[in-house]
Image (tube, rainbow, N blue to C red; front, side, top):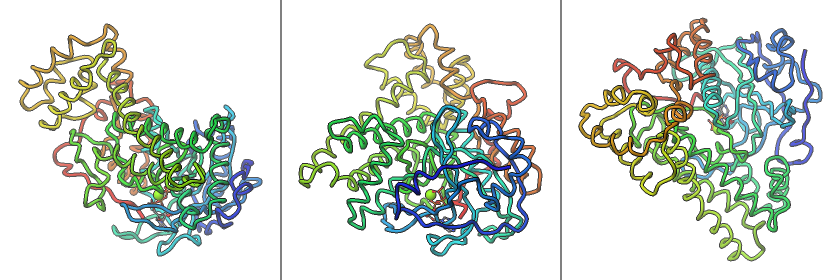
Length: 477
Ligand SMILES: Nc1ncnc2c1ncn2[C@@H]1O[C@H](COP(=O)(O)OP(=O)(O)OP(=O)(O)O)[C@@H](O)[C@H]1O
Ligand SMILES: [Mg+2]
């Protein structure tokens, strides 16, 4: 059993990709199918359960599929690479879900492509399951995200720093895989006509309302800026650290994409970095809003010729939007923080009230998730998270005076009990390497409904034990 796909990207954007085939997987095995997502996409979960190994390893193509590796460029840690592209991924095509929304179906880890540079085109089991887990965690939190439809093992062994690992492929579902870096690819080559084609496609697919604006390209840029500002605010409010916010990992759709070295922060510290390659802390938790602006500035640069034929006027128009990004971000963040704190009406002091709590939390290493969750129902339990509770005691009455009558309910809906705790993620991946997917399944179950506290899942609400040590993540390439 397979399914039918469309190829609007390939059809509308010649030159933006290379037609390619997946490497043959010697012994593909379907590890997990995301049945809920399959259903939502209008696919047949039972049929895919039966034939998924072949379909999701690239051995049997969906009807109408024209697999392509997409071209893109990107700024990685601030340095520009004019040619990146899908070095280990293939877009199979697009499906329209039950609600009429179009999604890309992409294989990640399906072998070398013309964009592979030095890489082997493969993905290891751990990073594939990690991307699956974190994507589901974000979805459970209501945060726009790409999601995993399936994970397969290929039956071959691949070599990574840790040694030989089982090869795997993730089937990723995304609103699209158009990145800031996709715009950069042709902008860097001075091909304005191609940039315009891409913008027209992205407008039609993601922001059709902007087509009718006086200045559609500027309205499109503003819509992307707004979506990204809202997204990064959501990340910050749940303590998510993406870890590799290169321009090739920022999706135009406003979905979170590329779960590489990402992780959730436990003790609050804005300088938190998990990625082993982020030596300067460029993508530290607290820097994410600044990188948002930096990346959006790079997007604006690609669109300047579309904004205005006169370069100075084009820059002025771009700046007008770019200058609003900080305020947009802060607006989303503060609105979200008001929910996290269950505040009664908006008040000019809300920012200071929240800021003072964060200062306390940072000084005392309080757990981000638990502090807010406990504050909702049990101030004493929240107090216990502070080594020196006296400063918390001084803050508490200020918050109590501002707390809304329905605060407990709103706070329970805004503050997850469960996030993908680092030690639980690692536990699930280690077990999967041993062939035991039970911890993975349990974690998926927990993360599907993170706002509901269930006694049997209490262990998933707690930070890692001290013995877990400092957490380090890897790109998994
Ligand atoms: N094992 C690999 N073989 C070939 N190319 C790779 C490999 N790993 C990463 N790349 C390429 O290196 C670039 C940067 O990698 P990055 O980790 O940001 O992306 P990714 O995780 O592979 O993919 P995506 O952004 O689609 O989630 C991309 O062009 C990617 O295709
Ligand atoms: Mg990437």
